[in-house]
Length: 483
Image (cartoon, rainbow, N blue to C red):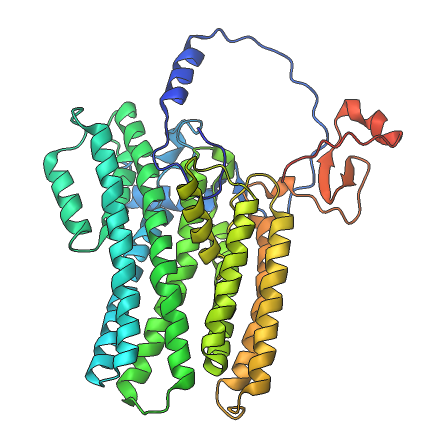
């Protein structure tokens, strides 16, 4: 099973090797072997609420609600699970988050459609055309992509009878032409998640539903992220640009609908990054890399403060420089695509697939950071954020110098949002990695190294007992502890 927690993910996780290993382990004779003495561990984080990669608060809340509602007769309690095989059981938080994702999907689409209808009623054909294009084109892309995935799954399962024909029929109909493929994925995730906790099923059936739950969660997360960057992010820039440049009075209704639609787009983009990141970690079925409830909250704030100021500054710059903004974005897109290609991510073998992947990730990097390479990400992230922050500040200064709307209500708000968003983004990101990251206890600050840690190459390294003599003599073997 792939250990690379970057994008893109392996859509169908292969568990056969793990199942075979489980059978071999069951037949092995247990031999007691003295454990090797471990070096002293770093002091636990004061605010760390993670235990073995799971959120104890969320799990206990789930158990209490189940006991209150059905006396544990409907859902199996998480304490009875083998965490080596079920490290990320379906929780009450997952149920609420998935229902929220479905509601926000409809909220985002419906408000955008209503906004396009109002542009049509006002005979603002340019605004209507662009708004409609940013609704229809992304929906076609993501639903055709989902239909393609169903086709691959159908060919893989053909003749095995795993899924009935009626299920395949409804999957296809609701994905295309009804265009709600992401909702279908979320509903299937809920179904398999509930079945994986069912107290009436056997352990083998629960395990099968658990695996399928991970599949559907990752598929749904990928669908939502594609929809967010193809529809929500461009729509947000477009509507903000229209607000900054329009002169006609569209009335009270439009002044309400447009901000409501923009808020939905902003929430959609930020949450899509969270849900995909969370699903990607859970899909590797490793107990220690799960994302906790508090980690999810911090990660959402981090992404919201990263995407929000970026969208605002792009709209501000476009309001004064129009087509020059498109040139600047195109140059940024090209540079980011080349940068991704130079990292040589090993996800595809065909040259055309590699080029498409590099271009797609380059487009995502217009708005936010996405890592595509294994290993330490700090240097790549620092380089990316340095470029993004520099671009944001340059565009903000250029807009502030050129604009004549210095008395407008948004002038001082924009001057505060961009720098303020950068500061909040950095602070929340640091707090996430120190307090809420699944392996936060392994991330040690190198400001004041102590006897048990040797700091070099800006990476902390735990000194093994047989390496202490090398450290004392100044010998550096270059072995680092990966964060």
